Length: 138
Image (cartoon, rainbow, N blue to C red; front, side):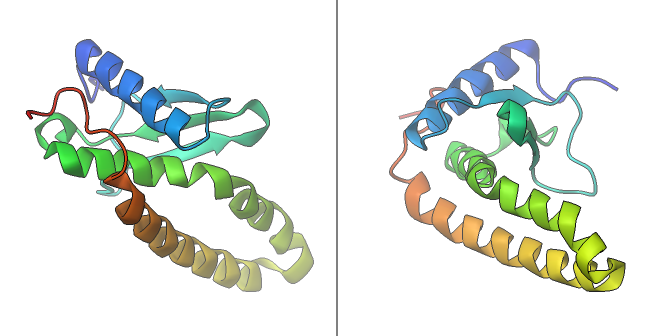
């Protein structure tokens, strides 16, 4: 499958993500932009490997054409998932053994939904305080 972003865009977005991550206190995390687009029509998605402090972010094929303010909002949103990833991973790993699959699925899906809402609210509140992408027109 072809890359979502050209190598030049991947470098630019990677450098911008590093700026955002540093501003959000994620200086010790390595950020990787995935080659493939997100699955299931998502606007973007992320996965972490907490013990290695590594996050992979998937961006849609049309990301370069999205309004720069929306790009910033999307990237901040995905980065804000990082600090709470250990909670989500813990619930996913431990609850099935403690409560069984149906109960753990209900709890983890609810937590995922509430996390998305909370992360989106916080991203909306602070994204405007962070720099616009360097490719944005003044």
